[in-house]
Image (cartoon, rainbow, N blue to C red):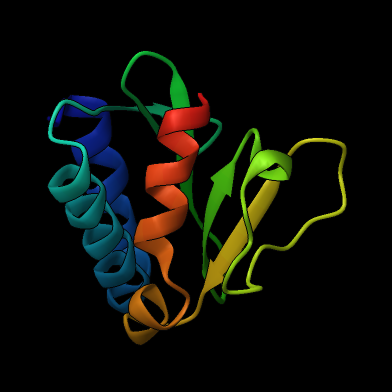
Length: 116
């Protein structure tokens, strides 16, 4: 599940902001609870998750954590929380642990994996 690069990224985040680290760790836990066969790797300064193909990424920014979907344009935005106006990509901004449930993140992760 975790390799040296992932551990290093998480360690660096812990030094910078423990609240953002808590959100990143909670999203990682959610992804693995929904998709136990998922793998993660460090890319583009964040964590990319895949099963058969990449389906989402987690990126920590200064004030929030973003869960990004490469084919977000194809997701059903039932909770109305997807952001982004690009051709394909969409993301969900998480400002707290509470946002993970409040923004129905689990259903977007499951959809994204099926589309990938």
